[in-house]
Image 1 (cartoon, one colour):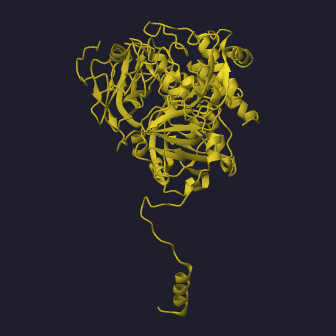
Image 2 (image 1 turned 180 degrees about the vertical axis):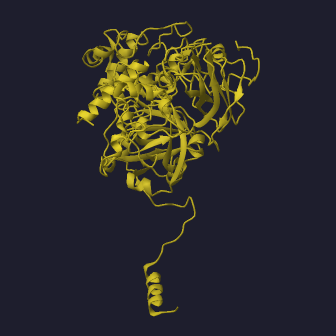
Image 3 (image 1 turned 120 degrees about the horizontal axis):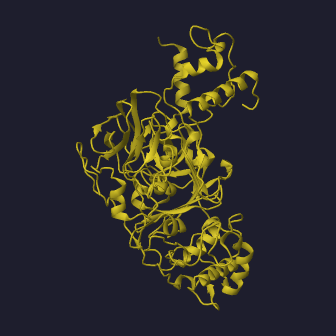
Length: 427
Length: 192
């Protein structure tokens, strides 16, 4: 990638020209009238009826490189950092939802939230200790963990702070800014209940402390019911080993729960009869209410949805057909219904769901739409299998006030202006 | 056809053996028992009961020295300035529109302070403070919040006895779903 030849540079200049010409930087993913612009920039040498230059010589050989990368024309599709943290090791980065299709997040684009940076762990020197209120305290190495009966399951992962900048005013420019602390992978590992049975959990045990091997030694207390229900200890995502920033070589997956409790770089599980009241579950991931009290152990991520295309930062180049596309998810189970409004919530139409919806996983929705050139307010509203309806921001604020930071799952609005530009608004 | 080759393969298969298909949730025989020494090296959590607090002690005066050397550059001389988390003050602000969440105004347990300082601080060299220094800096941060007196010394006996101002400020279990919306389809009024 570093060694651009002349042709590469010409292509890059051409792309920069395109971006400038179209007034779009980085986020453009909608169909654009590229042919006219290309024709203006290079004479359209690779467009019909000409035979493109890449059709007239051999392409790159196999293993270019051995671990494949996206096309260099996709180099703008990357995670972006928050500007809210004083360090880059206790910080977070956002998934570019506006550039993705389907419901699986590529491993290199899964959002990050670290509390002490990404440790560089040698898997041969990584162990999982399981102790406390058990019959037999155990220690497992990675090879042993991988020999246990295996499960693979697709589940979303969402930071409890996803959308936190949007409580009081519209802040994020793109869906990456507003909803990008959200990803969905197929996770492979062993059920936590299988490991707990190997150690023998005592009758009075109710909680489990999970601890990471990172510099934050990140810790959260997990209810025993969740541990015995659908909790996983995983070593793979989307078919390959966990990425370092996702907990390599071992992490917890607690489907539907807030992201920070799904401890990465998992080194220790301690079984207890009470929660440990760690810093993260007292002073940090608690939700301050209007009256000054704070909700604690607010684990589940409630039903939420967002339109990813067209969305903030996109430009509709002309009137006509656009498919409204988005994602819906619920920590309580399956998404059963999604509605879309183009008039700011006055009238709604049922969107088509990609099926069959999996519980606690991203579900794609789509609705055909013809833009008439006027202004529009695009919204989506998810309903899950418990009957829960995604609320408005006003309804959430009325119940909780405006200082709880976490768990904002309100309906998002994108305003399409008559010039085709799309921005984040509150209605 | 029944040949010598078939017979040979059959005999071979019976000699090699194929193991036993197991039922789920049998004893897999994986992993080994953790030793007391291994557990002691990793078992660093300090719950509200104070279980696991080590021997040793530290005073507010000693803590001030540790704080100035290890903590002040990120948390300010009085624990009220950045760039990192504010540690002191904020009392009485939680119900206001501008809540200031600090150790003194928000944290429900003093034991959590010891736990967190030991496991994650100082930011660039966690798990390096001695028990004495950890008790001392815990005492100093509590002193900055006027939760303990200037002449206080903390140890495994006294730390869990401290009652934090916001001890009863937390609500659980989770009361959600706390908002019940309806899925109106046509001519809907905006919800207020």
